[in-house]
Length: 593
Image (tube, rainbow, N blue to C red; front, side, top):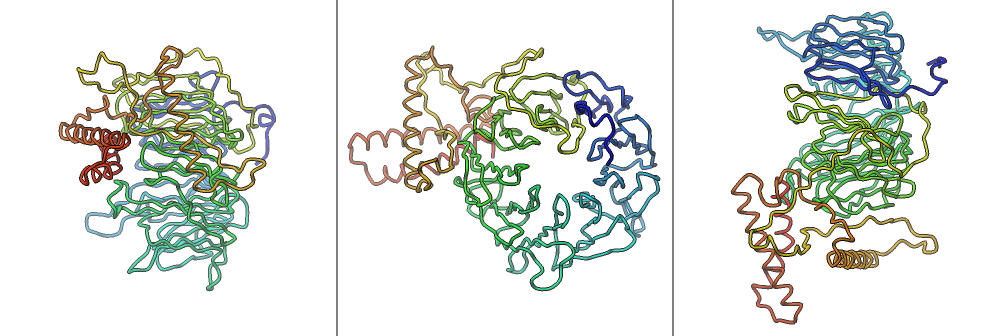
């Protein structure tokens, strides 16, 4: 791709595309936020789909009648295709091909339907090839970065085409039944990760191959089998040296989790593989690679969840402690990490400087259903979209230091369906030094209302005793410190954590004595869908919660008596042993699991 004069100057900030019941339009990025004249607003509710090319120069959208392609830099309409039913669009990496997909239908007399996946030549507008692609999931063919190869999963095989010639299958990867595959990013040599589900007592497995060496017993670069996997997610790092695999079962046999059971595995192209040991039980909510390809972050464990950064040896490097979170997002340059709690959590975000492991800001984006980093690595987009939430739709643009720079609320009778940044190629925006000072903003800040815990009438005038359901764990650096090369042993780590917890408890007690000195923090682990601590809207659930709390209080008293030297009965000791299970049950109820 040749660089124009415009590329040599500082690039303009990425545009925002907004799609909803008020139509499809574009907004200039920070600092202006005015409606863009590059794209005349397409009003009406018929826009079902839009997409940018990978470099952000081409834009394609469907208006319910046609699919149109424009060049964003010179506003020119490139092509129009009669595809009223298309719901998916994607450009190949070098803008050679536009892939479109419409739902597959068979005719009434049962004869096979017509091909519903079309590949168009972006230059000429001609249709290069049509395929039948029944499922919407993984509908789009996968291209290598230079478009030398293109692959799609057909009847449990992976078919490879070369140089966008779709009339000849250049290669096939055939195993028992390939359920899914992921092509590696970056330049040649290309690698492909494939997943084959287990059957008849045989385990599931993931294998890595290098194109086009698929045959023979030693063709695979690496192989990892799993007995517990109904589905897997495979994540390549940017340098294509390793894949992280999240293996999930649909049902957790132990009954501990509603999510089924998940495990995290690491497979490198040099054949090494490992199970990533996660120090807290529970679901794996999110796993992300840093763009450096040398570390990844996992968010996992029953709420309040843990977040940990691991190196390529799968050793923990930094532990962010516990908190109300279920997602992680590295900035495009990899130097900032956002941990967030969206969905059924309250939208609390923690923005971390990854190099120094310092917290930059803690903004709250309540009711968010979408999050995206701007390609400039400085701005963040959060949005509340329908159909996930049909009220309070809108979006906000933040600076990573926590300031809201722009806010758009959709009128109450309208809906926002999608909003996203215009993409830019890596390296166009240079990484800037991290600032800890909140950038100035004209948008008035709204402090989110904090739901206070329910207090029975008898306690309402009495001082609050700070009894937390969960002991929050503080963040800690897991790197061996200079001078003591040996990592801490498990016992030492346990003692260190105990010591830190005691220290935190003392600090909390001090804060209680002098409340005017310390701002009382918002209760961390009150899930958003509980209006107050113990009203879920379901009287049955509330009753159970109340009973559990009663039992836990009784256990607390027994523990105090034991500590004071009282000899407990056998049934009382049995009660104390049930505490952990009761706490877990209470947490699940409060989270609405």
